[in-house]
Length: 204
Length: 204
Image (cartoon, rainbow over all chains, first blue to last red; front, side, top):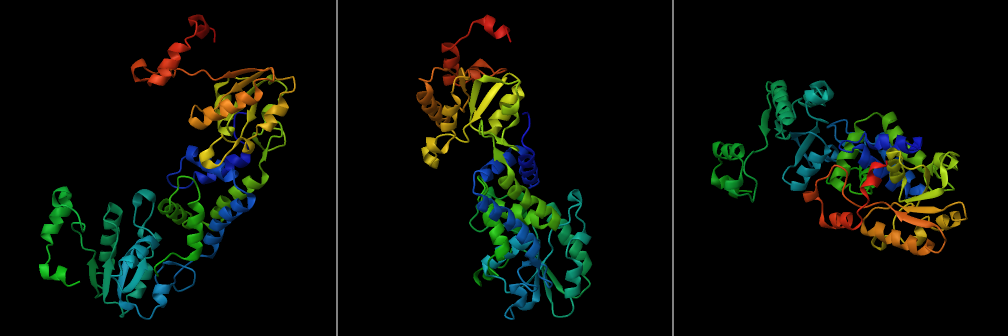
């Protein structure tokens, strides 16, 4: 015996397809599953299968949803004139938790990343253009400030700048609660360049 | 929308049951699965379900196997008089890779660990006693040198010391290729105490 049984090997290979999980970690996780009851492992495996089969993307905004229209798009109380462009559902939840945004979202499903073979055609950008039909008057670009995020922001800006909507982006600057001397130069530089009237920070 | 769709939530909760995977990592892994094809996620989930259902433990040694008797126990070329006691299949594979052991194994399926609620009755120790029926003349205790490993080693030693078999344990000492000044005190102390005749190290 110089190798693992085939069924174990298969399970390890599947586990190791997850990002950041190497073969040794995968083996440890799979051996943990083997110690559980059959029912519990059925529930484990089927949770992913069921999720992939039954979860849908909202036909309006592209967010993950249990129904054809997600709860934000279906809510008549949300301001349809403001669209916040985000990468995925995690960003929607993060912004919702701030309770500072009452408009709607548009979920791209990723960022342009030539290294990973992701181009504009793989993202939900055509869907965004279709939504710019008169009701929308502001697009808020809320993507990560990484290379991929900035590239995607610029690409979308170029595609929609002539559509007659205001295009804004999240404010960059010092984090709330951070200290000046520990703030990185780029961020501090931006904070000085784009300083805001003090009165505006009071009127929240 | 201030929470994730239920199907996504279920999948994240299942993923987070794996040891060392927190909820944030689980969400990242599950979103990666969502980007794959339905067939690919079916294969992912079913690999674990099939493994748990169809993999057996060898009735002789307790190792994971595809058949009732594992390939080591079924091999007439292996020396049945020497049993190497190990924690799980990973240790079997590690020892097999050294090509230095031609006996058979006995797999405990864990280590005694009161913290995790694992007692001697949860391990394959009764099976070990049953195998000490005359053909076995040496038991090699090859468990980790952790607290759990040492506890288990001592427990097994007490259970079988009167069975008339030689009981040995893996040599402890400096790793091959390591430097004296960086070796920890306990290990170096053991290496001096249990120094071996130089000739023995030549005769490999």
